[in-house]
Length: 344
Figure (cartoon, rainbow, N blue to C red):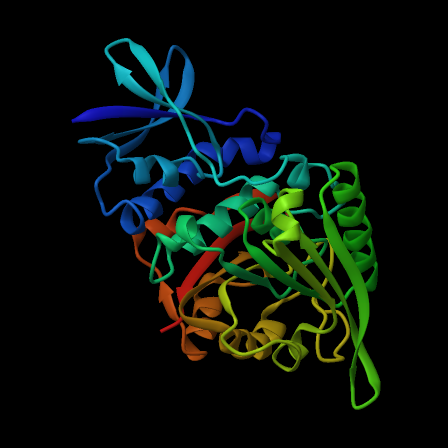
């Protein structure tokens, strides 16, 4: 039995950094239950020369195992312990673009990009086929996308992503950011903003971008697609085809930086009224075997209540032990947790 050590990224903000080790323990435990087939054991925090690591044991790591581990949200470096020495293992993350795609955009209320990656990871490996995370171009939906942190992380992985948000300022800010970022990185792309009409009435706007990782791939039609829709998420079923997404990943409104909007009911601090109406619509958009991952503020969305909403919508809530280790403090008004469910 060999021992391996995972070094955590040093760039977390202070508050998130205090939870980083514990969140990584939970993330690795979910990966072990799903993608790694239970081959990893003795997952723990260990200090080596005064530095905290996440350590674990395994008979051996296959190439596929290393590829999965390479995408852990807090991964900085992976080592095999050999006595008092650490032998580095070459990692192979999915990242297809420069990291500033997910780090450069700053604004009040932005979800930490490492947490967004964790939520996407845990959701992806909880689908019926965890290996699809590495082997397929997945289609990701964020029906409450804000300024696109989830969309950018999905793009980093080479997935296609669609977001919906009712806030026109967020829509404008994201479209301006992505156009500028693509031009600065000299990536071949097409970008278009078009109105969405139903019965001649304007119901929203659509921003669609096709991106080629190389000029040759763009010319060959091998593109990554980002779509952002400026509309009410309660109209998502009208605007998107049923069963057209593999994953749904979103932050429920935390009730602090912004309230919940939807259905013409104005602002509310609690997201539950919106989620009761929206989750049944969202569920129809995800393919059978796909997965749904939602982060939420436990102060305004109790875990059991949210789990009930997902179950009543026909989703299989994954509430076993590995999925119960993600609650963490963000600030005095937000204690964040995640819920993951699978579409039968």
